[in-house]
Length: 257
Ligand code: CIR
Image 1 (spheres, helix red, strand yellow):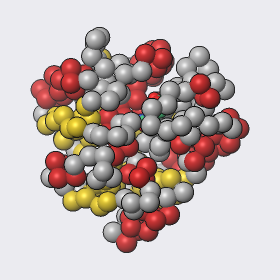
Image 2 (cartoon, rainbow, N blue to C red):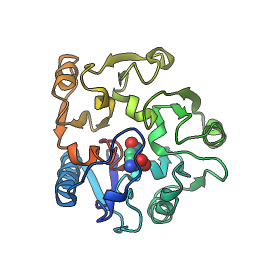
Image 3 (cartoon, rainbow, N blue to C red):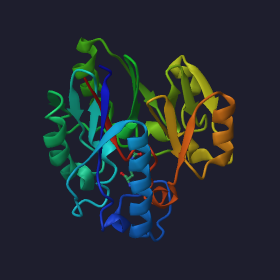
Image 4 (cartoon, protein in one colour):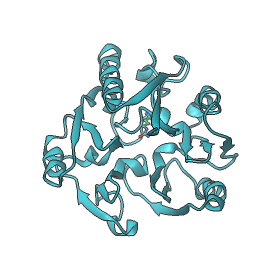
């Protein structure tokens, strides 16, 4: 039997207007529009043969929809993150309860910090973006958990963006989509495709079941992806982008037998 993918998601909090913001200016967020976008994203995950499981609503944490940041899931275990933004640390407990049913749990301990959005995994290789939300010690703790399992874990510097996965994501097993202004593309040792320069936020894409979910408003970069043979599923993502979210942030994918 082929493996299944469980996608954990969470509803957009009523309080999302109070979200953390680092690199974008605050503007009003329409909660209903953001929820409709997120529902479309969940449908795209279900179409990609994921079993979507919604975590309990969490209006006490305005950024709680961005579940990616709360954990790093490996084949053998899940490492609970310790988000760099103190306002987000209370998001972890419900995620731990859910992931604990599918994986043994480890955690990043204080004072280290690590956001899941800073962790890019391609097979047995893991890159950790350091300098923003994730500390060097957070990267070292992740390495201590993952290296004994056979993962090659390397820290990588980012500049001018929120997370490593704002700057680079995998769009195939051997192809990365990058914004070369935010990360050095050569450090990965893989083929890379650059975003269209007019779309700096377009490097965030979610590879699942042989296709790539990608913000529908990034038409120029979509054309580059399609020309490279990538199957793109455009999803609406402009309202949540006002909260500095992208398409990877909205789910935690867990492969189960
Ligand atoms: C934050 O600043 O933490 C949220 N407003 C956005 C988090 C986006 N997460 C991600 O890119 N993995």
